[in-house]
Image (cartoon, rainbow over all chains, first blue to last red; front, side, top):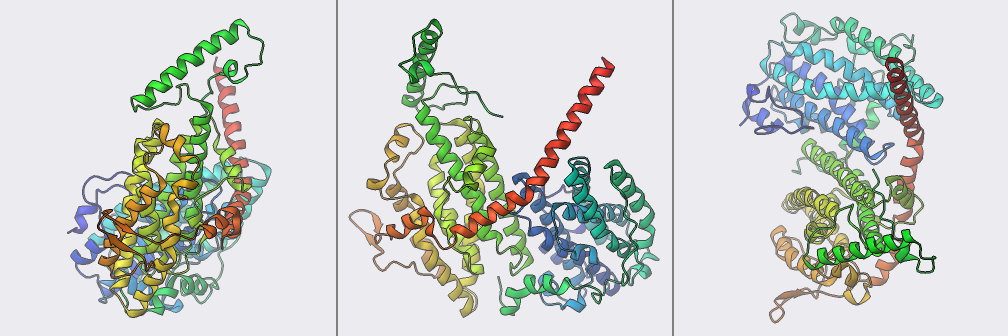
Length: 281
Length: 344
């Protein structure tokens, strides 16, 4: 049985870990139920990871090189792991499992940001999306480690080690594509332009996040903005590319009211589970 | 990294004028041949730098690269279910499994490269359709239960084939197979467990499981290759300690293994002639449809075109990325050389 404290020192799933691997089942069985508002926050964080894992999973068998099939698959797997912890913890507030939340919520009930919902596009656009998301989550989890909620803190600690590798992967590809050929530089710039309008949503002080940040349970999104932008600007310039000047797209409230992608993503992800409600898999 | 082939021209081309060099090369080849024979007799391992007969090298490149290609194409049918896996745990396990297949492809291509054939060359053979891969992947993974059936029967057949390959005489191949087998046995268990859950679930789930087993059983048994009488390369591979058991022996071993497993699953195997033969101490099973098998091998299976088109699209769409990575690496190397010159 894992308690929150047991997995604070675990290594990435992508590296060799010592001791028992942590499982969402262990977390579900052992932690105290999340308070309602904390659960809504965990759900929001978990939805981002779940949708991005769903998007990235599509690359497996379609990547430019075998090593990238493995790398993108690995990152998707890490993100799915983070989603499972966060959804399991969120569900504890309402007596729901991670699968209840993943498969039986409607488009309107998801709280994912539009950045992770964006299509894979070409490899450069996927890397651009990874770059923004991994730089954001790295900053977020570094701060969430100090959350007053011990379960969120433990999940952040576990996820941070993996996100550290995700941002390295994205940054290395940004440099390679930015400094590779004329075509790769053009595509990488286009990729950044395509996802940049959805960066601001990550820093919007939505509820319940803003309220929870007053008690140091959540991290206030707007407080992440400066560091993330500074680091992104530096790496983009190092790659010989331009920071897009696109303003944030309107509707940065994670509601789904301003996204056309979410419905398709969920339709595909949920189809089988919904054909057999109540079945065990 | 490619290993340079030993120079054997003096032996390979007896019409060349015999020079001093040719005499020395012939001596080297004779010593190499004796060493190789001794390794075979003592059932020891051949390593990349050892002399080996060209035919041994070719046989291995063909076998190892076909195996690698099978892992790569095999990612497609299961990858087809990653986005729709019915629980997050199943999704996670499936993603890890398909990723393992990519890893197996990587070890195997690396093992084949030690024989002097580059990964790009092997990719090209698959891309052009010249290279073969396991025919089973030319059948569709239509339902979630196919993920279970692939794990149980396809990976199960693969393990039965591959465990003896861990002792294959060529070192890099045998060592790659040790790791592959460890992961495959985990894959087989997860496939069996998916089917067990389905066959103990709702009536619809049980039906889904039975349907997948019905479709997968025959092609899985054919994974061992044609009957011994129609398998011309087998004898030589056995003499070279690459292959340890005949196709039919391995197939029999597999059938004997899965019959009780199917009973435990509560599913039937689609062969009315399947029954225990007391005298032989094995299960008898019906002849397989070898006309269909050879037709699929020749490219006429339900999904041969789709599988290859998927692979080609991935290679084509990724070409600019590989070019960029190579260009960037070259620029970095130039910069490093430049700064080394400046500091010298």
